[in-house]
Image 1 (cartoon, helix red, strand yellow):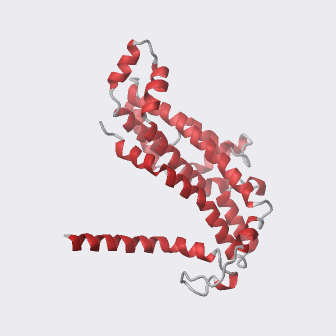
Image 2 (tube, rainbow, N blue to C red):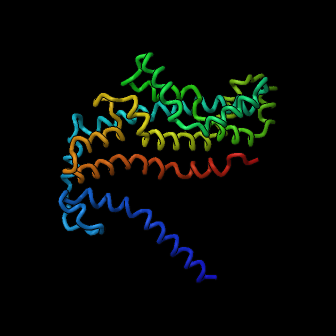
Length: 274
């Protein structure tokens, strides 16, 4: 029994190291001179080139911190929008009784299977006619309209696990739907809200396609778009600086996941539980 457990753990550790190797190689490469990066696939470090981070920070038309701020603005707006709109829509599907609820819920779930590339053209036309291109509005405003069906479904399942007796007791005390939602449901669904916030942060921070479509001015670039522009600006001559800024862009994701992992696991584990 102990031998089998040891073998399983050894296999898991080996697989983990294989998956982590590209990230470790990128970290090491960000500290190497450009001429040595592709000479060896190993993780050995003969010299320590901190200049890659300094050069990469100032390689584009704006300091890299400018793009970090742009991404942070979009991420913050997206998180607030998803938490507010998706939780309200989820409460309506889970607690209210209205005509066509089942059909609307099914249609909402069907949008999960709809590729974003199918709707990007009509969305771009609408936002272009509104004059929102090269602003953050196309990336933030839809989040306030409950467009993320995955998060709505996640919260619906969580709310269904909350006893209805709490709603009935609050209704006896004179609470309406808004007060029940705000004072009873929201405090109890913190794990689901935290899961939504973490996933929204990761997906929005790493989003490249949508931000590339709507943000074409260099001063509006976000981190993913700036990294692409960085390659265009430096061609094949400054891979060390590119890898250095890639590491910088990954730090917020690691920090958020590290501190939010407990809430993330709890939110997923308790969704739909009674």
